[in-house]
Image 1: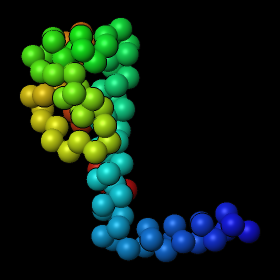
Image 2 (image 1 turned 120 degrees about the vertical axis):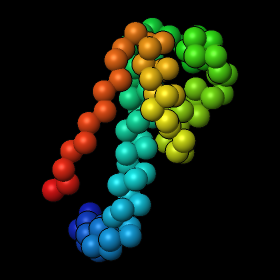
Image 3 (image 1 turned 90 degrees about the vertical axis):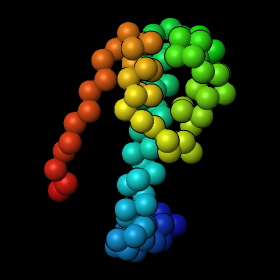
Image 4 (image 1 turned 180 degrees about the vertical axis):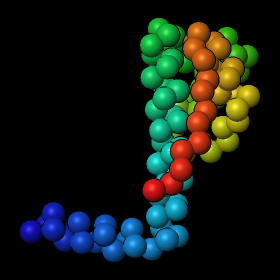
Length: 96
């Protein structure tokens, strides 16, 4: 019964365009932060090691890997990708 109430409430929220747009924005930010952390782990780097490679601090890397960070730039993402020996690829996908 509780699941049904939660689903009904979620359905109601997602009908609101403003809520949906904010949710999408937050979700995309979370995806970027997760991808940065995954890339760093695959490169076998600590936050401190990555920070040194891109000339920043460990706390900055921690912020980039946090879902609260919103200041990603292509330049920053390229520096992170290069330090982790990866290519940065950006794509635009039509909305459904």
